[in-house]
Length: 94
Image (tube, rainbow, N blue to C red):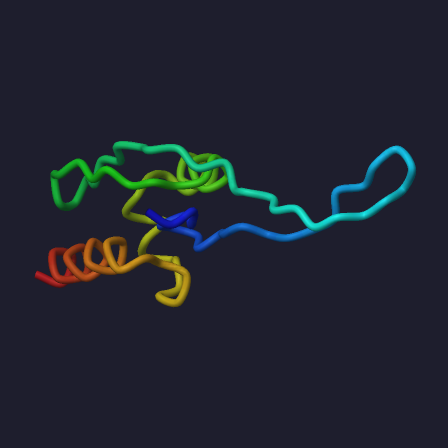
């Protein structure tokens, strides 16, 4: 399982660990991922996704999973999230 948010695409970043004597060595900054059960109002289903805490706050701000997915670009979404977005578009079109 990759350390990448399924909704925003946020992944590990790199930087330097700096010691007290100012020696630099490489390190990784991992995103704060959490498993979340998200309810889709239009589809009437619950989806279990592994998303970052920042994405969870954004979901609350935008009003839920459905508005977030409709506004999100396809490049950032995981294949599972793209599948949910396609189902949502089909449901809203009918």
